[in-house]
Length: 631
Image 1 (cartoon, rainbow, N blue to C red):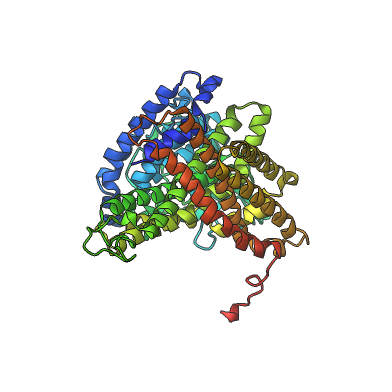
Image 2 (tube, rainbow, N blue to C red):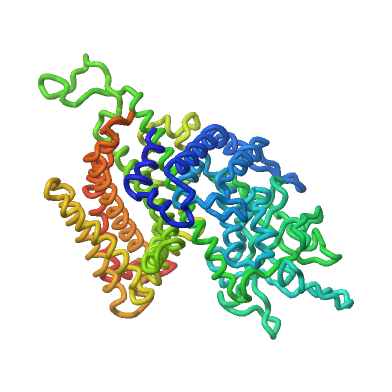
């Protein structure tokens, strides 16, 4: 299959990842070390994760009222991931890291998402949890709570949503009060070496990895509100703080005790897909596991009071790009499965096989990959899977540039990454789901059965449009904040990058008219997006500007992916000229496939933006003004 070859092409022919080794942070690395990490990742994913994908789907987590039970193979697979040192691959040696570039770390993760997205969710969440503590916690909190996650000894979660407040975080009801004994003794527990100590009471919903027996501990990051002087929580998101709430209590020296914190499992959520990731409803502070004789889960403030959402966005943004990559790789898995099937499944004959222009029914059947509509479905899947992977790696390299690049380079990378985050989450989530649907279609009736894996890929992928911010939320974020922030500075950076690609394609167009045509189409699309953005906000009325934020998100995403595919076409042309893939087992067809897929995207996908942008530009209120009783 082409996944590994495409990773190599994206890293080395397109992103020039080897150049990162010239930076001080990555100076000890080379293409050889990158290759070794990718080889190891592919091996573990193939041998440990992939065989469990169907098993964890059919044997869901079970709760007997006391203990959550997972298939016994689950912790074995995760242990193999941890023992390889992949959890902290991009981090410092002080927390067990290798100082790899983030783009290589994310390329490594692509193999695990494709092998079993449900199992890969555990390291994804744990890494994000530890990264958040690393970014905002005290040195003691990093040593005690983050390091265990990076070393794979503990697991991590993010606890945001509540039964009555899903995406509306300003409405969360979980409270945190200073930990002062309520028995009249006046014992003050708030001053703790691990941080300012609070007691939390409330309920959290949709918590992936919230309860299991793997690892030494589970470290929850919990959003809660601290009551003001009047005893009432501060209204809105400004009243939200972030807390570290371990499942088992931890001593100041980092020793994990056997005493449970007052965090109790209320039940498991039974999902359409992603079944291998245990998903929970957790009760904090209900008194099932009292601490020092009192109800209330012990939690440690991380960051400043009232800045919880700001801190949590470190984890949320990382999770959003990870969700997008996970969606992409489910689309990639479906693409590979349907491609293999299409090459082997004989059915029908060429339309013009007969002498009179009809079919020659005496001729042997042909593989269905020879049929035009099957080629169309495969081409769309390829465009989505490989384009989505390219987008995910691009975002990872932008993070590298933000962290280790020069001043202006770092600033522009940070702006561009912030702008692209809603696209990196939403575009693969929507279109890789469509790719999985097409994979089922290629297999026909077989695809709709559990005898083939494509139906599971579809079920697993359906979650990705929902968690870590729905399409509606991503659209509001993009049009309501990202494209207008700092006077549209981030949008200008993107336009600058696209303009550079367009100019390069125009130069190449002297010998390739197709590239010149694509450059012109992208330039027009960029102009339309800019004009539509101005039209949406021309009245200054947010209700009008944001009435069609989701179509704007779709059009913006397709424009970004057209840019990505033009970049990939240029890289493929350069690789062809260099002849570096001529000796590859995949042959020149590998690069020609990249060029053909770029042609497909510009011919079939980019033209869709006109309809999406149309309703945004004219501030169409058809949906916004619909009344409840009309439905």
